[in-house]
Image 1 (cartoon, rainbow over the protein chains, first blue to last red):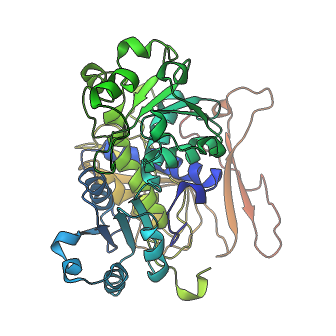
Image 2: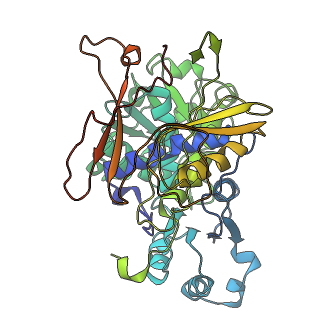
Length: 310
Length: 153
């Protein structure tokens, strides 16, 4: 996979996803050491190109790159010449001339990582583009579920919340379906795309029906920054209808786990108690995120000589 | 692992992340298991490899081991030394030296006993397969060594 872009889960084959997850398991061992660094990507340069504010994903990529000994440069629009009306593609070309070995891109507009990948020689990893995809989040979610359940095939996963505006939901739907799981989605009707069942998922407007007997519940964050206008009457009503607490959790399978991509609006998507304690695995997701991104950087970072390119 | 009744901590070290040829291949090799004892500080560490040739794997293994601590000394035992060293690496204990051509292949596999009992109880629990490049003849058996590492004598 060296030199290959990672723009969306829908581009990946089941075998590729398995390779990435297997590699991530190997990387977890490095994270458990006293000296958490291996020389694998020594002398490689990774640019974090984040047009949209991000602390968690950017830090995760930065730690992942540094644990592999790569040089990681963070580039964000506030500290750059984007304020001088330089176009995104011009910025990307400028960065490309600095010979990075991998560029990680986040942007609030869907498709920007794809556009950037077309002008860059280096592989591009999509760290979230608008409401399109967030492939590394879905991969770390699949890794977390795989390690909790020992399999993905045959599991039932319920994704709860703002499905229409969520890149996390979209990537996870593609990923879990590809790995043989059954996927259900639930949320207030304005947050469920009309054609969502065309993705191959079952759609519910009742939380209780959606989580009935499921193995995994994935609560999504209510993203106030992406919502223009009202999609539900009030936060309190959302919490009462789609917020998860231990009482509602009884409808899921006895050993169901609860996930959230973070940051949690406590008391809205999840009760305080569920945010902090099993069966929620939110901090495992964060921890696995570093190993998963190490795996991806290991697999794709580098430029192929022009002759062997495609 | 126990030898002569003395328990020895056994570690498994995958050297992939320390290889010197990662930028030369089009595909990154699959990672395998690493399970090391919590520390190798102030211990004598014996690195066991089946077939040693260029010495590059031993080099990678030593770099990897240093990340787990500071051993008193590191020694290497190889069951087969087939020559063609590319680095100044000396093997402390060799099961058998096998002269080979550069493009020959030496494979090392554990031998199954006929009644299905543990292979390590056999007098020669492993066999060496030398595949000569030009003829691809499997010269099995001729080069068998009585290797008992990891087993009881």
